[in-house]
Each structure stands twice: as C-alpha cells, then as structure tokens.
Length: 292
Image 1 (cartoon, helix red, strand yellow):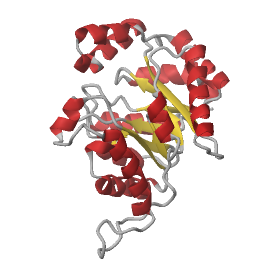
Image 2 (cartoon, one colour):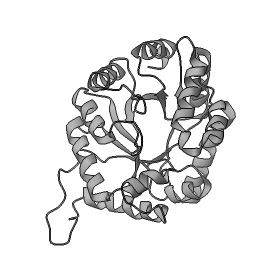
Image 3 (tube, one colour):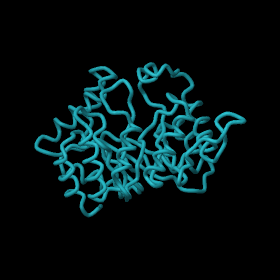
Image 4 (cartoon, helix red, strand yellow):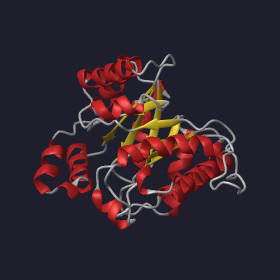
C-alpha cells in the first residue's frame, strides 16, 4: 500500500520556505504522493501554484490535486493547468475531482451550485477529449501542452449516487474518514467495488482514502482544534460535533489507521497534517518507517 502525504495546505504560515521544505522532505522520506486541496474563501494558498512549486523541487513523487472542485471552473482552464503540471513534473500529475460542499466558494467565483454533478460528468469527459487533442473551440488549435502521460482522474464522490456516477468515468475513488476504524475503511472498499461491478467495469478501481492526523505533545487537542477551524463554515455546533469524531491523534492511533487501511485493501492513503511543523513529519516517518 502506498502512503501519500498532503502539504499542510489549510493552515496559516505555510510560506515559500515551508512549501519547498515539506515537498522535498515528503519525497526524501519515501512517501508516494504530494497532495494539495482546494478552497477559495479560506486562508489557504492557491492549489495549482503550490503543486507547480512541488513539482519543480521533486523528481519521483506523484503530484496530486486532491481535489479540484471542477464545476467551479472551466474544464479548459483545468485541462491546461493539469497538463502544465504534468510537463513540469515529468509525467507525475494526478487529478482528483469533486463537487465540493461549500457554496461560498462557488459564489466567490461567480459559478452556479445547481446541477454541479451533471456538469462534473460532462467536464470529465471533455477533459479527456481536450488532452487527446480536441480543440477547445471548433476550428482553433488544440489545447497545449499535451500531457506526458494519461493523467489519472480520481473522484471524491463517496455517496451512493455519486459513487454510481463516478464508476462510469473515474480511475478510482478517494474517500475521507474522520475516524479511520477497520469497519469504516472496509465498508468504503466494499462500496467502491460494488459500484464498479454495477457499472460493468472490468478494470479495478484505484482505492484511496485520507484523514487528518496529529502527533506531537498534545495530538488530540491539535487534531480537533484544526478540524473545528476547517469545518467552521458549517456552523459551530456541527463543526464541534464533527471535530469530536476525529480520532487519528498520537502514534498508536495513526499506526492503527494505516494498518486497518492496508488490511482493507486500499491501494493508497493520503495523510493530512494539522500543523506546519516539520517535526511532526519526522515523527510520522518514524511511526510508519516499515511502510515507506
């Protein structure tokens, strides 16, 4: 099982030095993927810019947009951005897509929230055609640059209806767990495989999941404080309730979640830091050294 690591994307204080140091260290420590997510009305850095920086200072680790809220954007722009990252990385780009859950990000970009799943389905199909050389406008030149490899498209849709739709076009599914228990992780695998079977897919899905983790001296307050801030858009009551269900705090809990994901049959997990302190990357690497 591959273990990827997100950059501490949603935290204050992730500056140029932090981005480059985290990217270099993630690769040097043996992780499979550098991920970075997208929000607009939030404190984070812009995703494509950060992924380009990570691509420029690494040689082997995958560079994953995890995830692009595709219906907020023009698929032509995303196709060009991801093809550029693929070129800059030497063919290591991975595209995660989803519809998001925050209407304020759509509003900030003046994009409609309605029918976003229908738009996503159509956009993914067009992305593939654009990368294959279809001109963005009839009679115009094809979009460039061409990607160096077939960029995997991983869906973040994990509900029953979104899984059924994603199974028609995705290369895999990337879920998210607040509490990565063996039962929750195994259930996620079963649901994805069932959706693939129902869609008549013969190729197996790439199975991914992710969760927030915390180490250091006070891991549980760190984890839940981060979760409350990140989920604050849903209101304090719901943010508190969700934060209290986050459990991957401390080396034993982190290790247990990884072991449960491996036993469930995941191809890759992506762990998400809750601080910018590289000391927690040191601790994580030590905890998971036999997996790296």
